Length: 90
Image (cartoon, rainbow, N blue to C red; front, side):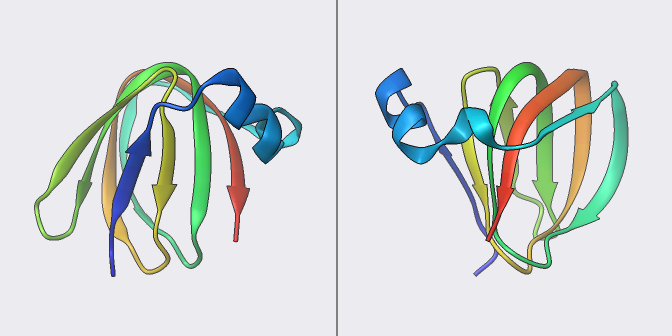
């Protein structure tokens, strides 16, 4: 199933998941296509992006969001404010 799930975790949840030890990825305002070969979980430290899946569903992702992208998801990222995120695959 090609889904994007967004949660608003608290500090305790983030620490239990080990989010702050995950690698960091940054990207300036831009638009690009992406395909998730495996599940990705990420925590948005800064920025704003709209992610539109191939079926036309769009979600807005903001600072403080914990996002799970399912394996097999094809989408377009439309970054309106520079994104900085922690991420983890699998």
